[in-house]
Structures are given as C-alpha cells and as structure tokens.
Length: 258
Image (cartoon, rainbow, N blue to C red; front, side, top):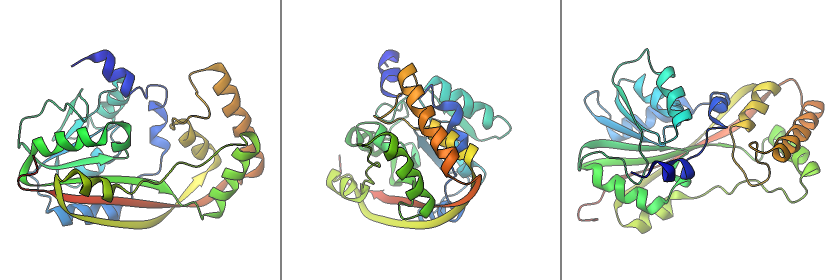
C-alpha cells in the first residue's frame, strides 16, 4: 500500500487529540444495532476508519471481537493507548478501500462517521469482499440537531464571522447503499439524545473537525478559528444541554452482488 497516499487521504493528525471531546454514539443505538445483526462474542467486527477508537471501544465493551482499521498514525496511536487495557482488539494500518483482510473473513463491518472520508463505492466493494455471506454492513453518524437552540446560537456566531458559512450536508446513505447493488434490506433508524456540555468541551470538539472554512494547520486558519472561539465564549453559556441525533444504516450482504 502507498503510505504517502494513505496519509494524504486520511490526514487527521492535527485533529486527533481532540476526538475524545466529541459526544459518543447513543448507547441504546449501539445496543439496538448489535441486537439487529445478532452480534456474538465469536464474531469478527471490523471498524473501518476507527479513528481514536470511539466506536470500536463501545463495541468491544459489549463483548465483541474488534479489528480496527485506521490509516492515520496519530489517530491510531491514540486508539491503541485508549484500548490497551482491553483484550480482543487488533489495530491495523490500512484504509477502507484496502483493508488487507481476507475474503469472507468478517461478520459485521462498521463505519463510524468515516464512510464520507473515502470513495464510498470502493469502500463498499471492499466491505462486500471481506464480509461473510450472511454478514452485515453499518454506517453510523452522530449529528448535531440543527433545531437545537444552542446549535442555532452557535451557527449564528459563526456566520457573524464567516458570512458564507453553511452547515454540513446530512447525507442519506440508504440510497447510496441500495444503488451499489451489493447489499439488501437497508434498515435505517435514528435516535435523539441530549448531552451535557461545557463551553470548553464544545470548543475542543470543534477542533476535531476538518472543514473548508478554517484550516487549523495554518496561521490564518488558526487566527480565524480563535476569533470564532472568542465570540462563542462571549455569547454562549458556560454549561448547556445540546441535542444530537445518532443515525444508522444497516444492510446485509446480497448474494451475487459481486
């Protein structure tokens, strides 16, 4: 595998240490997914784009056997440290389109907020290749509820600094999965959850985000972000409750899809 290409495609090195500030996936949503796919202790679950281990660890703590695929060294090293006290997890430096895993070796493949970071069709082709014939594929995301009052306040603050700012698009992965003709019976669900936040944690969660408006790797991007942070701190409360939506799409491998 071309290491330089891996780093170019998956370079979240500057954001890695801030990933722990992101709210976790809703625990009941994770439990519901495990029940739906019939997750068992002897099943191999592959978490692709595992980052610093947020989803991998939640699955591991529920008794599953995990292979965490993460190409970015900084992200993967944090994940290894976070999961070092746990057994039944293996970390691999690879990508979602070239996992290095054997054909039909895995029972369940998960993408935790990572499918959009790669060529989704090639990643689904690779998922199809490594899934057992009755295996499942899930992509899951944790999204801010745009109707939440705190979210609206924060966006107004950002727009006051970046006039053309627009929130990210919420992609419907169901249509993409069905169009691939690799999987069948797409099951979608979402769950609303509220998290207690502090302004410090909220700001640090923003530091984990890559977006086209500010690049924290540059002095200009850093200065712009700090300008936004100053306004956020002046207009938002010190502590607050914020609503999120955990959204997940799960499908089973289709016979003859390759």
